Length: 315
Image: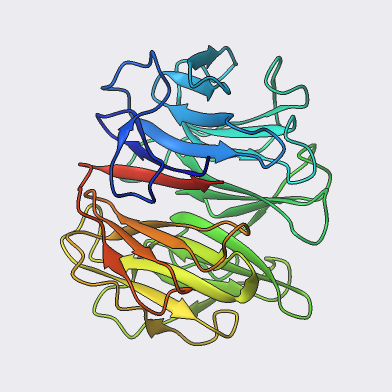
């Protein structure tokens, strides 16, 4: 059964099996005050969901039970979790303080990857790995966004890394999207706006949004058309106002998607190829908006969930 999952601050993981109309606790047995920063699921593992939390790495099994998965990241906040599209047993997790770990056996063991991050940074003290993306063109290439330490790239599955910061005014990177526009194009959502790269991240160009705020959080391609992207933009974290932008030309231009009155900065967009026109967007302070027509129109869902940090739709 398809489910929509919301990772919250203070309510653990909530799940809906009616497209967000009603909600119940997921990860049975998890203490509800747990803070969830990341969620991941794979089409080859029905019912299995991974969560990055303030108490380590968690897995919900096919029966709905929460299982703590021991890892070297225990004791750190796990801000990002990603599984290889080709193999669900290949799992990468990123933490705050900043570090990166890889498992090739479904979480039975992890090893730390040799990514070189700064020891300290302004505002948050230590850097945090905000997003991990497996490249859609080359299986061995992995992209990582770091708050506050730019974008990092590996071309060998994580065995070596290169920091890519040329062009960033301030390397506070919240999310990254990789699209195939007759070749690889990268888009990075940052605290000071949207950046793009057409040379594998070697240089970055700033794009001024037609918005009174440039703070960006999540960026996500539509599941069936990587020329269409959605970008979350608002007046800061958590913020009190915001806009969801939509691009139909690989990020060259952006239009207001008109989700309605956001109570805070839009934070994340969830999509899935099983129904590419079904799209969800959450705000930082708990609103969820749903579109059933690919982002043409939006409906605000009735329940607000406090503070949401991540959103996942998994058929």
